[in-house]
Amino acid sequence: MATDMSDAILQIIQDRGISEELVLKTIENTLLAAYKRRFGNADNAVVRFSDDNREVSIYAKKQIVDGVYDPACEIDLEEARELSPEGEIGDELLIEVDPRDFDRISVQSAKQTAHQSIREIQKDSLYAEYKDKVNKIIVGYYQRERNGTIYVDLGGKGEGILPKKFQSPREVYYVNDRIKALITEVNKTPAGLQVVLSRTHTDFVKAIFEAEVPEMYGDDKIVKIHKIVREPGYRTKLAVYSTREDVDPVGACVGLKGMRIQAVIRELEGEKIDVLKYDPDPRRFIKNALSPAEVRDVVVLDEDKHQALAVVNESQLSLAIGKQGLNVRLANRLVDWNIDVKTEEQFLELDIAAESRRAVSELFGEYDEEISRISELPGVDEALAGALRKNNIEFIEDYLALGEEQLASLEGVSAEQLAVLQKLIEENVEIVEEDYKEPPSEEEPSEETEASETQADGEVLPEEEGGEAPDEYECPECGAKITTDMTSCPNCGIGLSFEYEED
Image 1 (cartoon, rainbow, N blue to C red):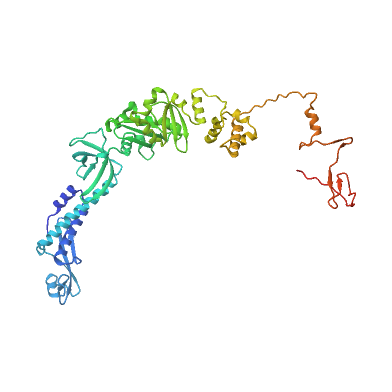
Image 2: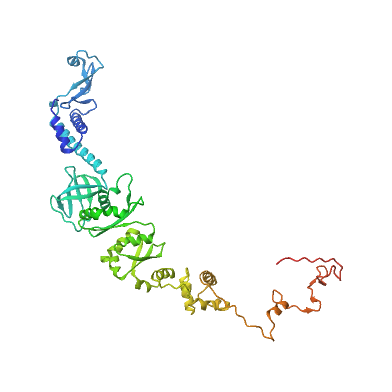
């Protein structure tokens, strides 16, 4: 088979984007499929191309035998010597197959095989090409729209789809409009390759910033993005930080006279963008996240549950919350905290923990160091404070005035709770005791006199002329009365020795 295939191969390479090697492989498979369809087996078929790939031939490899059993694989010696006079039994010959030997069915089968092979090769090539471009920006042109989905021409190398859910609500497109989008998915489908595009993903904003801000790309990224949150078409918040102290990350993103940030805003069709500095301290990070509002202070209500309260001036309240709560909602997602925004007056009216009220009172210059109520003690159990209020005990002074019997008779309060409360009072409240004592009267003995007549356990000892009376004990042998000054029992005569143990 001699054909001029150079033009055909070149045309396939240009139109389909397939390499020359794959085109030649497809032609080889096509001829082998036709041979198999005609002769039933292609194991002995050989396809060869000329050096310039302008001609292709298919050969049947046959063995020289004396008596042919399988004409597809064997050739008689006499017939073989007509083709090659030096042929001997056992040798193999390559005999060119005439294209006219293929019937119409074989040719049609080969044609279908060629079309299918080219489609599969093209699909695999495009899949490998676009798979490496996932999360990267690509530029295409509006081709058509169906059920809200926009089909984008990717420059002759396939077709991308921009679903309705991945379109910004403020953007409108017309035929042949240029569309810059992010490749999010690449899928193989029976209809062909499917390249899914998006203009609403946060990675789309990230890719645009990396293209506009030189400090964000390269091996040594000076400015890095901590997190991006976005409400497509309305507002985006971007937290950035710098790996070098001498580089301002926010200034690098904004650019000289705002040129860099303006380029990003134009690409997003006027969407508002807040670029703020990331801070590992959650209080400072929350302050930054609520920009453009100015926050006076942030109070952490529950660190484990990530609950915080931002205090702002009355004039900044609506700005901090944003239209329909958009600003504070994006700030919540950016810092992963539940943020509540209050004015100074609203905060002071809240019934929250004493530490939090004290922190903001210090901010406003209204904090009093003295703690008078039990509920103001740091770390006090709210249930305990409530139970004491039911017993008409709200102030620490009232609690300290109670005796042991009165404390034991309190309803809903256990001894363990009272012990914890006593410890909190000792740690946080300075108790001042008065040292004033009335002088003893003439009729009443003074403390010094009582001390000389009283033992440590409060028992009064009888006085004797010679001093204190000796202690009396029983003899361990006979039970007779003995005293500490005796060396033997007066009754049984057993020797005595007294030893004292420290209590």
